[in-house]
Image (tube, rainbow, N blue to C red; front, side, top):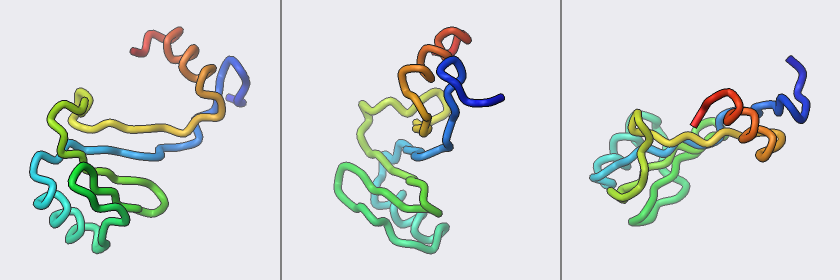
Length: 92
């Protein structure tokens, strides 16, 4: 299916943010598993660049972690058109 205003293209997954109540433990575990250090490391968020994509850790208990414990962000060619299309398909 070709991208159009009625069918905006998804450009790919950009960011996945996981709830990490123990940020130090999450940072250590991900650093070990991924064999890299975070590019962004603050008390409110830790971010890893994994092959050009962001893997984030958020310790804030009030942040929405989504129904599966993770929030993902997609790149799209036209955000307004993508939202309208998803709503028309019953998503959300």
